[in-house]
Length: 497
Ligand code: NAD
Picture 1: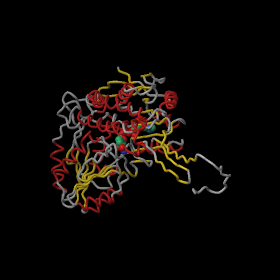
Picture 2 (picture 1 turned 180 degrees about the vertical axis):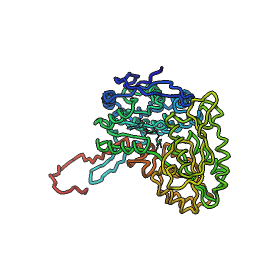
Picture 3 (picture 1 turned 60 degrees about the vertical axis):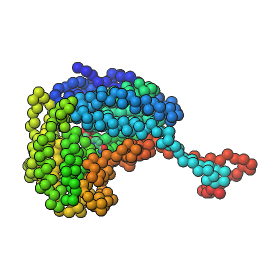
């Protein structure tokens, strides 16, 4: 059986630990490989390597760093089919969706190619007589990324292209459920000319994560995953004096106003609720039907949800693939059972789906609940599967209150033809990423990604200028080159003359 190892100092290396995890192909349910799970000493020795690499990498001119990132961009394009197949084989999502997610990661690489421009500082001449002042941003040192299973290429690519372009060195701890993509990206970075030790991948579980949090030489931690772990990462990074951004879970609402283009809203909901089998932090898992639109909305959604083509990710006819693991399938199924017990109306039931030839795959069909209310656990909690809940409200204000009261605040959308409703929504809603007649409002690489409330701990989002700021520290220099009379010592707070 294939064993997935770590990538350190420019090469694949076996770790010191015997601990291994299982990696499945969700389409067949078969275990296809094992992944080595790092010990604390594996992590610590990798950080030593990255620390050493930082000494030279951080002083390389930004233009030279950018040229390597440019080359990496070309290599991703050249190898996109292979990378996409790796995503499909370990995550399960359908090929075109996996390819789209790779493209969204590639866009961050493209953004990072502009690093010489992005790192330009500020300069003020003559802040006092013959005194100049300038501000620059310098890299932090060794930084780490801890990433979830649902975007094995894109989420790491939100982080490392910008971090290394800024001059940091990086240790990535990808999800142990689908680790192969990260290793391949590391190989491509080496092929692009990245010096050894600048980008390293350590596979592992909680032990590796805790070793990251405890390592004094790691200066910043970027995390994406579920909210309880995000909170743990945030608290422990802060305790160990690290800069931290920790993105958590979500429960995203799409508000359907009575005046909207209903076909547009239904199609938007279908893709946003069931795409990637709902395993997206920006999935729309709650449709809020405003006024009298509920019956028509549910009727149209149910026809489409029943007709969803579920199958292996490599089958071109599949619109939705399997879930990532058997345990996750059981968890999602148990939420559907719970919704029935809680009294919601299960309009479309995808439980127990068996596909001929793929009987052991981790499949569930699209599920649709109507008459869900705010007290039900299926409304409050993140299910992370293809389960769409319809909540009916009377007014726009009621819809907005529902969303603002929810503990999560990652993404949200409104479908309407009323500019006033759209504008008020964008202005008042307590959510970080807002769509108006757009189902999945994921910001582009040159903007920044991040939710509010318990969907993000820390104060900066991923990529865009937030990424540049997160991966650099500010230095401000005030300088005078004395000529003529030397000044005497001054004992009062300096003010510029
Ligand atoms: P997860 O929290 O289980 O795992 C994320 C990472 O944390 C993995 O690398 C994992 O190895 C590690 N981890 C897991 N348990 C740990 C523990 N007890 N101690 C220390 N480390 C631990 O998340 P997941 O199931 O891989 O991913 C799905 C979650 O990620 C969902 O909640 C989803 O909403 C969220 N997510 C959020 C965003 C966002 O941008 N907000 C994006 C993608 C996914």
